[in-house]
Picture 1 (cartoon, one colour):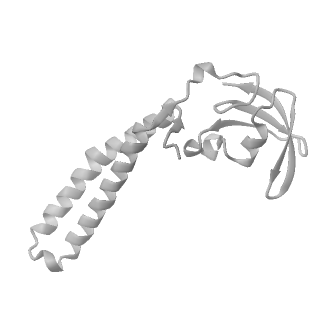
Picture 2 (cartoon, helix red, strand yellow; picture 1 turned 90 degrees about the vertical axis):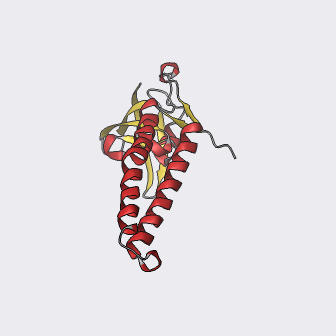
Picture 3 (tube, rainbow, N blue to C red; picture 1 turned 135 degrees about the horizontal axis):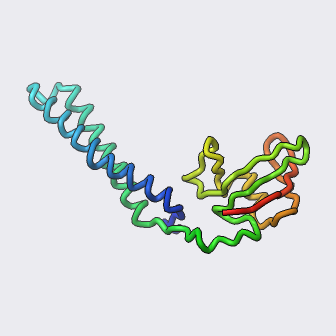
Length: 157
């Protein structure tokens, strides 16, 4: 199984920011907590010390996983995205043919999906139904509530 993960420049920057925060803020904070708990005496019955050491272990695990993820990230070259059809990183304007509602979504890698920002995972049912379609095409998409038909109005980047 490939460890490669595809991210946008923005998504990679968020990973790096999180890693820097864990290393530069969280790690020193936990070290201080351990030192304070150690200063309180007998470590064998010191719950604060045990909790701080457990938190340190979880933090180091998260740091390690983020470092590995960042090492295996492949950036998506946004300048080479074809806007004649729906692909990952396409911004797609859709019309719901059932109710006339118009919506716009950006198809992004799974880890960057955020519905509030109108970014949907390329692995979602809607994205899968849109991939490869062109402006004017009708995409019939099966969702848990049934089937919905969308007309693709515009594709951009």
